[in-house]
Amino acid sequence: MANEFPQNREGTANSRHANLTSSLDLSTSLDHSVRTRIFKIIVIGDSNVGKTCLTFRFTGGAFPCKTEATIGVDFREKAVEIEGEKIKVQVWDTAGQERFRKSMVEHYYRNVHAVVFVYDVTKMASFQNLKTWIQECNGHGVSSSVPRVLVGNKCDLVDQIQVPSNTALKFADSHNMLLFETSAKDPKESQNVDSIFMCLACRLKAQKSLIYRDVEREDGKVRLTHQPDPKSNCLC
Amino acid sequence: MESWKSHVRAELFHRDCRQRDPFSGLFDKVSRLEEMLDFHIKLWQGSSKENGSSKCPDKGGTLYLRVNEVEFLNQQLKQKISDLTSNIYLKEAELQYCHSQVARYRTEAVLLAQGASCLKSDLEEYEYQLECQSKELTALRLEHNTLREELAATKLQKEQLLDRWLEEKKEEAERINKHNATQERWQRLTGRLKKRYRGRSRPTPCAANSSSDIKPTEPKI
Image (cartoon, rainbow over all chains, first blue to last red):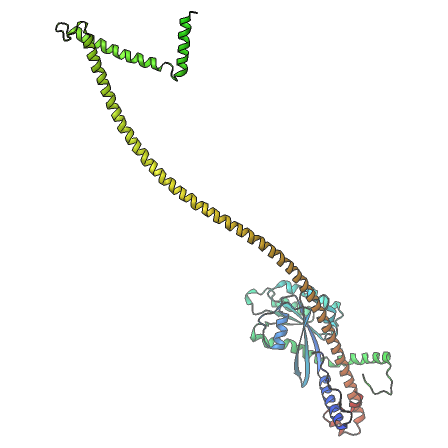
């Protein structure tokens, strides 16, 4: 998944035409791959709240029959089109169990674009632990501008609900988050699951100008440190 | 002490030693003699009443006495025989009862012996089973120990695999993060190139309508 750069960079030395064609192909594919932006979204929460099912429902469109505890992290990706722009939503399905995540936490939060906090509506403890997850997120230098959403999963278990919607809503409001209550299992709720990630993707796309401003600031730093040769045309 | 007295005493002492009941013979004798005396008295009284007509042909009535004595003894013997006969019947009945009891007990004993034999064979079978089970238990214990050791080894292996998996996941996460960073850098560069290209191609507006914005930068890559 990570290596999406074209492998065939070599052309025949004697054929200029072929070289030109390959260069054109290269540029087209490069252009295509470069233009497809990636939004890294991490999904965190207690173990067994349904993070894997939620991400699988979004990326695979189905509910997995059997899941096991996620070890470390699982990467899932879905290409979406927002206002004509192709965007890759890269979902990091993180481990909920401490022993499977302790050595990986810093990787989760590095250059993260959005965070999805998940809790189980049938388990009050998973909701109460959200504070710890938010603390961990803030502790890893995730900017407040990074969009965050709160997702209450397993809404199909109507008889067992322990976390009232208004309590969750108050919590989400107090942390400036959007609240989604859904079920990864219920096929009727699949639109709702999609909307969680699409909503984040839209917000991230809307933040584009802000990101570019930050990027330009970073560019200044790069120029100072690397001191590129003004005559050289290489942009790498 | 006089010699005959000591002799009698010694004889009596010997007799007492020989007989379990030292005076039983004497008492029997005495009772028999008393009985005979009563009989003689009755006979005497009877004969004195009938004094006038003498029945006994002998003088002094000795024979008469003897005959009557014999009759009396005869009667006594008859009575004794009758008693003994009834006693024999009784004993026979008792004996029959004892025989039936013996038969019953024999049957019971046979049954019990059969039961005992069955129990013995069962016991032997159980002993054999116990032995087999004991051997099986020993084998199972050994297997259990082996399995436990294997489990420990598997657990260790699992932990190692888990660590390796985590390490690989970490590397993969690092690679993806790097790829994402590279992608963002490429996007920044593309943006800059686009800007530059637009700046250069402003005098020739036709070029700006080309399908790919990145084309002029090809040689640089």
